[in-house]
Length: 383
Length: 212
Image (cartoon, rainbow over all chains, first blue to last red):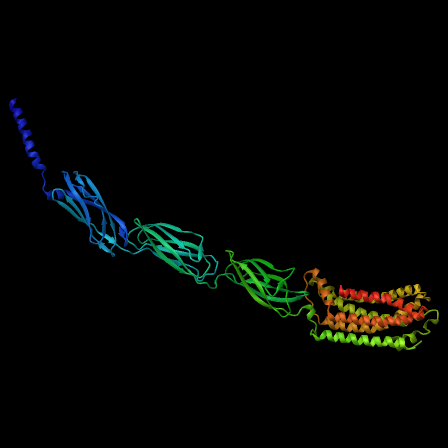
């Protein structure tokens, strides 16, 4: 019995003596237990000036804990801001992982760079790992897909903008905002959201220019936490809208209507769009008079026509503008006019209407008065 | 009794001794009134035909009827005016002590209308000349017809024709005065009163039409 006790003590003692000798690893062995099992660069592709993060995961693949003194990220091209976060790390247990995140700023030219991840072990060993980081300053593209050939002041037109993502990474929070300088839009902004690489999205704005200007639309987006902007310009040049309603006045007949003139005719919409609220009247020097100061034709579809009559006063021989006033669907007012030449009025249309006429008549009356007066005088004097 | 030339320029001689018989001969006065009525009818027909052109298109066919109505109305009106003149002269002269039959006064009134034939001829010719040169407008509003007619009638030419008519009326008045002196056996003053009062009223009415 006493022999078993001695044997058990000997085994325990042997264990105490040999145990520490087995846990003791060399620095190279310790380093070999550590492995970079994952890294993440956010954003995946930097744009010049972007701020992002590089997250590196280190795993202890061995069976014994490994003591880490500090962890660093070095780069000659990118600026790394770690503020000594990982100057004292501690021990990473067997089978455990630790993640280290560094802030970097891509203040360098476009290219692929390899920052140097360094793990300094307390027992003189180390782990080194290079992480590829891409800097590509290509921004989103924005192009005008459709716009009117010409603009008209105050007329609402649709403008479609195509936003594309030529980058290798996804961008998010994409929106298009009109920068209003001399125009107004119905939509204050149009949100697209996320654009994956090589994806495109269309947005449409209803814009109303008030002056000849350059409409600028800003495409705002985020690459990681960084805001970026791409601008697209739409020059506004006013001109004759080729599709607008075009009022034609024809079959015009101007007649003297006693104390005034009456003009009758046809009004035709020779344009491609509807003419709303068509009103026919005369402008100065003509003076509209009752009963038809203005003639309301109403709406005229393309190629539609209607008759009208307008009464007005003017001096004979004057040129009086006959004006057609109409609106488009947005309420913009347009005017087309032709000139009328007024003829003589009823009282002026006699064969002899010159200024000598009254003198002739007065002379005739005087002669007759003289003759009759002479006869009466003679009749009373004669006995 | 003088010649018909005396009727116009020496009515005293023309009417001298005319009303010594019981009944005057009214054939000549009636002939004068007939001629005057025809001239008035022609003038009225001219004016009516022009007025008819102001009517809307669906009433355009009424032009001939309106001209005929105008002619007949003016013709009858001339005879009525003859009788009215005679009645007024007869009534006023009676108040001034006039004696004699109404036939005498009717004859005087008829003879006195002789200058009106000249006036009527001038009026007919110049009315036709004037209205043939008028461009008649198309009036869609019936309310405007009156305005157009008034404007046409207010023309200086028509006013001159009316003025000439008034001068010839004074000429007629002169004949009427001498006629009434004989027919009603009254003095020149009473005859002048009997004639000039209605003539003045007629002239005033004509002037009021133009001024008003």
